[in-house]
Image (tube, rainbow, N blue to C red):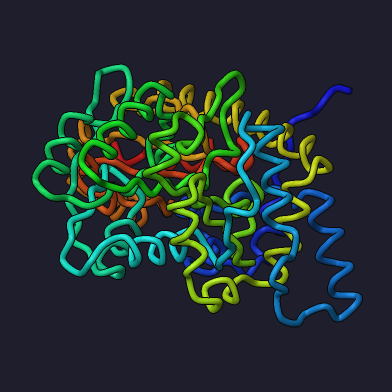
Amino acid sequence: MTIEPLRALPLDELRGRRSAKWRSYPDDVIPLFVAETDYPLAPAISRALQEAVSRGDTGYTPADPGVTAAYTAFASRRLRWEPDPARMRITGDVIMGVVEILRRIIVPGDRVVITPPVYPPFFEAVPEAGGVVQPVPLRDTGAGWVLDLEGIEAAFRDGARAILLCNPHNPTGTIHAPDVLRQLAEIAVRHGAVVVSDEIHAPLPRSGRIVTPFLSVSDEAARCGYAVVSASKAFNLAGLKCAIMVAAHERTHAVLRALPDEVSWRTGLFGALATVAAFSDESDAWLDAQALALDANVEVLRTLLEAHLPDAGYRPPDAGYLGWVDLSRYGWGDAPARRILREARVAVHSGPAFGAGGAGHIRLTLGCAPDVLAEAIERIATLR
């Protein structure tokens, strides 16, 4: 069966949405600042939610809504990994899961490594859990970004207790290589540190790429690590509140088992129902169609930048639907997103919010119609 790329919904229909993407700015602004996509929901998800509404099925989430079994099947099909559903707990979203795990593995004042430029909520999640952020920036090789394993080991040697990993990485879209992940696990075990891996973008590799879950790479990774996963980015379900905390060793599973029941009660019933539908094989064709659309937009952005902003720095992501663009050569300051919003009427995410390495950069979302992306870049180019 031939799969056609997904098509984004028309702008007039999208502007009827009530999510943050479409309610944060006036209608003359093109919103590309937040990781929401403009595609219709996967049919299996729409059907599950519509059936729940028709039944008035809006009560409390049960202890086992089928989410962990659905994720296990999905991981086996799509990620070449078979985690144990008995070693998982559900919660409201990935950052909730990260914070709850960190609270159990550090004591107040412990340092936690993060690897900027990185998802801005990491800077808030660590102190929320009682920790202190210790940045160890990614290394730019000239061809891509990699974890600074020497810097991470130095931080652990100096007493840092954990690392909050982003795999695949946001905003660069980097898929960390299996050997790098294995080395990270060895370093963590050597120093008695813990790895918490945010793998929310793992269902979104570009065509021909493979995402390796951290917990799958070695016995050391299973022993020292946790993963927090969700269907929310790949299937545009952020507002429905469902994520999964995953362990792969009895010692780490004991930590998840000891979490209060309230941590799982925070899961939304609609989020659970939608997640089961998303991770079912019924949604695989939809996910493949979205991947085709995103692959095309990654190349659309590259072509647009070459034509209209030739001095911009851009490397196509390995995974996800985020474009990380360096505009520093244009002299628009450390935070060009401000001028872009004010003068070009395009809302993009400001690079400095991602920490070290973010000055002069913007992050924009590629899960939109190609003509919307084209208009956004053409508007930005008028500022040259």
